[in-house]
Amino acid sequence: MKLDLLNSQWLEIVFEGRNKKYGAYELRKSNSKTSTKAFIIGAFVFAFLVSLPMLAKLIPDSSDDDASLDKKIVTVKLPPKEKPKENLPPPPPPPPKVDQVKFVKPVVAKAEEVVEEPPKIKEIVDKKLGAETIKGDPDAELTVEPVGNGPKDVVEEDNNIYNTAGIEVKPDFPGGIEKFYKFVTKNFSPPEDEDFPGGKVFVTFVVEKDGSLTDIKVLRDAGYGTGKEAMRMLRTCPKWNPGEQNGKKVRVQYSLPITVAKAD
Image (cartoon, rainbow, N blue to C red; front, side, top):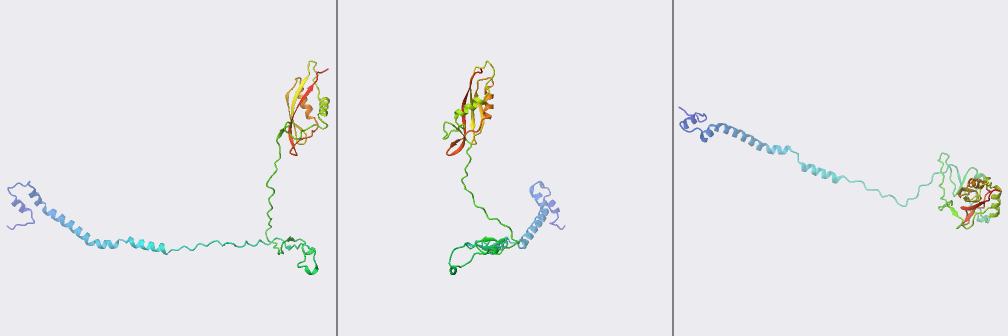
């Protein structure tokens, strides 16, 4: 009988009567499958190694891109920055809306010394006088020359209320204090109550810059309506001569006692 090594029958003959559970039997029994699998894997690995150079050519070279990118960056040049021109004369002003005639200051001189004659009256009618003669443009925009700045130091009005103790010129009633007391005696109406014992009313008021009396207050009265009567009487009082401080009229607070006699 002819023995086929590729067939597994020879294994049965070789291991007949022997322990088939031994590892050698299993190895030889699966040898054909292992060899086939190894052949296929080896063929794939060989094909991959053979085709590796071809695959490498298909991958783009990044170094070429970097080189081209560097080349592009280097070749781009920014235009030179223009420096601002210095010491340029200011632009000429726009022409005025009306014609401007040069004003020549009249000077008394000899006829042969006259260089330029002043303009005649008819030449400056409806025209503007200036340092030079300029032809006007009726379509030009009307411009207003900037005005100068006024004084920076603004004098603020003094509205403080001064006391008679430290004022230079004290306020007084026209004709003096005695004239004021005569006014009080004439215009103050004492209480008609027979039980009124008499007394004093202490008042304060502000003599304004124009001499009028404001902020009239009663600090203490003698009762029986004497405080209200004192306020009424002071509201009808003529204007005083205002007080002064540093040569200027100021507001001054004035205190005054009014003696009210007992009703007869």
